Length: 105
Image 1: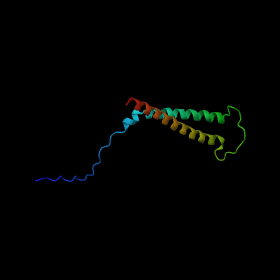
Image 2: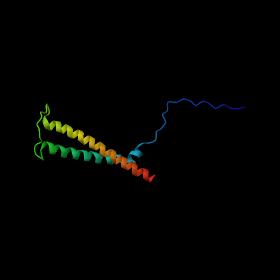
Image 3: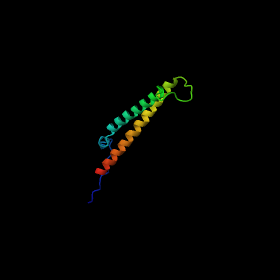
Image 4: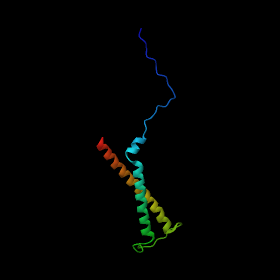
């Protein structure tokens, strides 16, 4: 007599997933993010100081800056510049790390 295979029972157990922390560590993502944040912050501080302290002299044209005044608006712009720069630098460094890692494999 031929025995039939028993159908697999359905369980609520979730299969274990492979760890993903190894890829993050291999690509040095925390280091790249820290370097990106430092670069973005440095660029934003320099841009803010040049604009608000008028290190190159007064800028041509005058405008009205409602609610926050010029310093407040340029502080917000400096935050956007810092965030965008940090993201760009961290992404480029991570891509370079991925390229170098792919060469060793």
